[in-house]
Length: 315
Ligand SMILES: Nc1ncnc2c1ncn2[C@@H]1O[C@H](COP(=O)(O)OP(=O)(O)OP(=O)(O)O)[C@@H](O)[C@H]1O
Ligand SMILES: [Mg+2]
Image 1 (cartoon, rainbow, N blue to C red):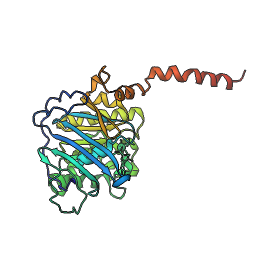
Image 2 (tube, protein in one colour; image 1 turned 90 degrees about the vertical axis):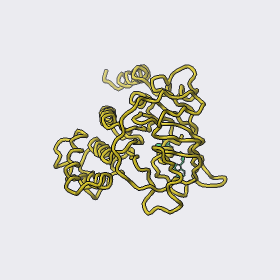
Image 3 (cartoon, rainbow, N blue to C red; image 1 turned 45 degrees about the vertical axis):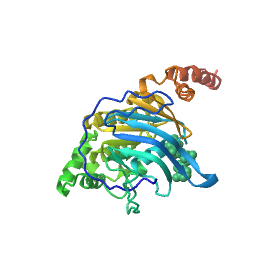
Image 4 (cartoon, helix red, strand yellow; image 1 turned 135 degrees about the vertical axis):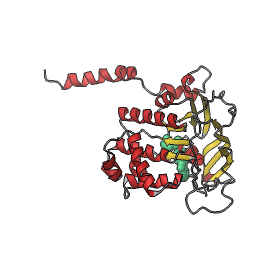
């Protein structure tokens, strides 16, 4: 199966429902009533023959409407590939088997065998990438980019899109609306660009936002502010979120449920506040332990720093 083309259609945000309670380790997750996203036995491979890389291996998962999911795992574990498969951004040449259903619609059948004119994408899903600078168009102003998303997804007039673009700039906490709307992305700071990306991701009223490493280019306090804003706006709109990150602790804090990937396999799927439970997969416990806490940093680094300062200081 190759995930096929579907071009954008406007969708009002769905009401938020209660979070899926999660599933036991190593077993197929239970389907919550009316799941927004249903992934069954999804395998994605790049290349063919002996050199094929199985980036996602027989993954099954569910996301309920309005649910907040974290996908964590080390580099190369298949997080982005899983996200791209859900968003319909995989190249048609990539080998995909299994099924992905979004809002009751099987993404595998939607293409009807026709090669898309535009890259395939799943309507109702938007995606935020790690680097806002390379994700935003350097040529067009922020206002034009926002108006374009609004017109494409809501069918509003040019004038209405201009007004709504200003509203979105304000909504993501950027002051000086006129300057931001007129600015090219490179005229804004990294934190401001990230907010613009969030506005672009939400302006089309998606039912699911996938944020792939949305904060790893930001300093710790800007990252937290970005996560707070993402949470606040998506909860307000009832939008489900899949956040992809290396930072298991940050993700766990902002999600209802965490999926843990290891070499393409889904090795953990459970409530984010119970990741360290005794029956968790050893890799999940390893991942939790390998992130130093502030206490560890002080314990490990301060003696070294003191030693250095001591030897370098004048007698
Ligand atoms: N376009 C591609 N062509 C060939 N192999 C790819 C391609 N994209 C990803 N891969 C391979 O698939 C595997 C999973 O990659 P993926 O980018 O999904 O991992 P990731 O968990 O998102 O990693 P990171 O945390 O570094 O972003 C890796 O072995 C990677 O080299
Ligand atoms: Mg990635």
